[in-house]
Structures are given as C-alpha cells and as structure tokens.
Amino acid sequence: MRRWGKVLREAQRNSIEVRSHGERSAYILGVEEYRELLAFKRAALEAKLGEAMDGIERGEVSDATPHDITRAKARYGL
Image (cartoon, rainbow, N blue to C red; front, side, top):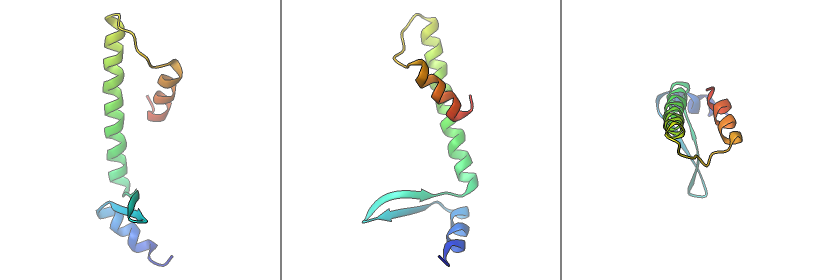
C-alpha cells in the first residue's frame, strides 16, 4: 500500500475515519490523540472507582465483581 505514509502523516494532524460498506468501522489516530484518549478514559475510570469506594464506605453495595475491578485496574494501569 503506497499511500500508507500519507495516511500516517494525515493521522498525525487529524483523526481519520475508516468506512466499510458506508458504515464507520474504525478510526486512525495519531499518537498524541491516542494518548489523550487513554488519559481521558483513565480519568473517567478513576472517578468511577472513587465514587464506588465512597459508596462502599457509606455501606452501599456495588454490582462489580472482583474480576471486573481487577480487569479494569490492569487495563488502565491502576
């Protein structure tokens, strides 16, 4: 694919939407945009975990299993 270099350069400036049969199927992101997305997702997860911990301290019950929590922590490096 000779255009791959052009696609990569464009992805550094703007995300690229990939379509298959007229439907969105993927996005190509530059490294910085990807890192920003991961940071946003991590911050959202940390906020949710913080809310869950606050609920536990108030005696509320969570429906998250230990496996769910372990998997989330591993995925986002918590």
